[in-house]
Image 1: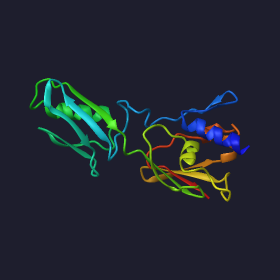
Image 2: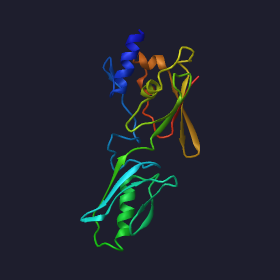
Image 3: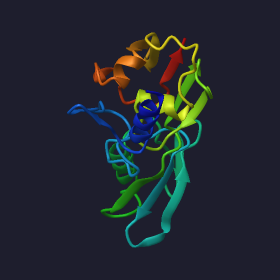
Image 4: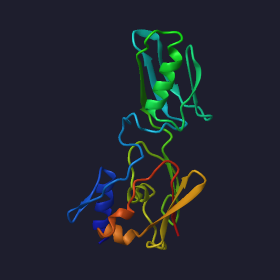
Length: 197
């Protein structure tokens, strides 16, 4: 049984799992892939590639600072954290119009560094884990070395901050591993905390 569980965890870490015809489906609003789309919400620490067409001096790789800003020639500081790529791009285009007629600007996320989840409690290696792709609860537990023998596997909780509210999601490890109630195996969002009692 332990061998089957290990294989299951490895398969899920490598890119998804189908059990008994049920496929784990991620929710939305998270990093979708290694190259996030225009709806990706930028966070502090992310590295952005910003380029103005036909102007090498206006091609920069910038890191989103802890205050959420990036600095770009001509227009100075631009608020990036907490906004989508599309919103930042549109804001920069509007501000560049004062200096460049009809600017053609490209904004891409070169590296996702702000997607951090936390796993604490009775796991092999509790801690803070940066991830750069979609990660489910089961995958995060696997990254943390798995639950230990003293863990209350049916009482795991995920804590998510939404504005001023903390939302709690229950997670029953044994059910998910057995392919039951797979909707519990949610895709994690930036800042989620998994607690294994």
